[in-house]
Image 1: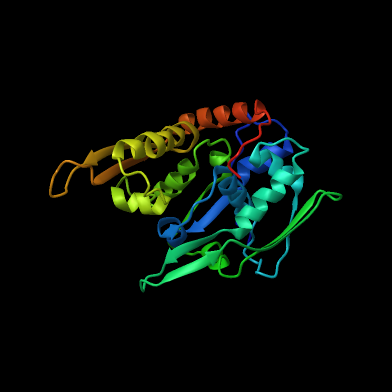
Image 2: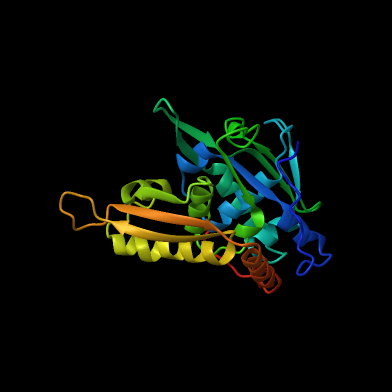
Length: 271
């Protein structure tokens, strides 16, 4: 069974553009372990490319299955021009070179790679990819403790932390309030370099919350707490999550589509 579902396509704003319909109906599915316990640092482009690859994975695929992609699809997710073949290669190489740490239930740290092999061919405009065998258990045959969301909601995000925080909050669907230790959140996002909380708030938390509220199916607010011995520094952050109404989600869909329609190519430096 494919990991894709077929959400109803709002006819009020979607035309017959097959590309946008595919973008709208594609589903990303991940184990909650991979979302809550994985520690990795990926650029915004790398995260979007990974989400796209995951959305195309099927339950019957194995680590020996070679997935074939049209290279033009990567131009859309990376927001680069159709002649930037080298940027696609660079992004895929960077993603293939990356790995992430997952802490198992036994406390063991496991190093997991995203991809096994990547082949690109400019003449045929095709990309051929095999997922790493250690990655697949976190993406397939997930019956419980997993998170799924529409690829559509992350396509136009501008902060690398927006996708990570969105996944975290979606992983507690049904739980309206979730408390994090600030230090725990820093570790998950691998941004321990922010010694001052105000920097973390300004550059990580607030931009992510703003984008989640503008571009996804949930609304997020948060409150801060000081529970340390000194009581001077913020130690806890409590997120409140509510699902948007149907009309609110339709407004989000319109906003994303308008942004996609108006996208222009740019040369980013975050590969």
